Image (cartoon, rainbow, N blue to C red; front, top):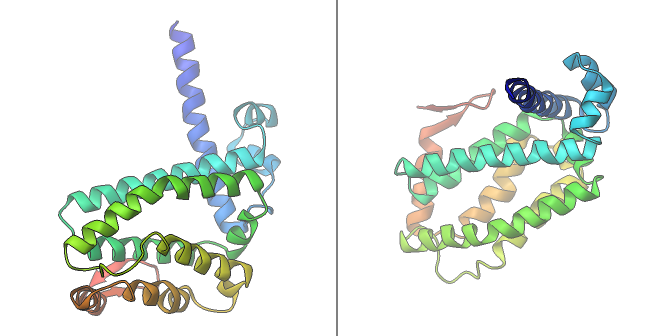
Length: 219
């Protein structure tokens, strides 16, 4: 029984290590440039062991995206629990996204669209998160930061369309991350805000700088 427990614990630890290394390599080089054989060699495991845990690259990729999304969601929930208002939370999510995209090879995002099961997973995950999004926007309305005259059922489609346009037109290869997000997402966000929300955004943006490495520092 003890041997079984140790084997199970080893496999769980190995699974986490594979996901971590794979996502690092995918982010650095793009998904299609990374071969399963390369991952096995880097982790000093056999190809057979790798394929016993993940039967193909797309399965591994989906699990990696799930882990990333779970970590991001848990962090933002923790951040919200510290007493931050909706504008604080939105700008923290914005900061995280800018930091992520700045560090990731644009080929990674272009490659994402070439995996149908992953595309379906991401679409399903977005649908499941809609209820939380609407609750968040309702909170923002109640706090006086978001306009009550907006059809928030349409807003996720707006942001999805913006993201899709950036990817399909290879804009990440033509413009800096900051320029894209400031001119697309941040301007769209401002359109949802009341005067109180706009003042909060301007105040936070003027007192918070983004270093070249992506970290947030107070002036």
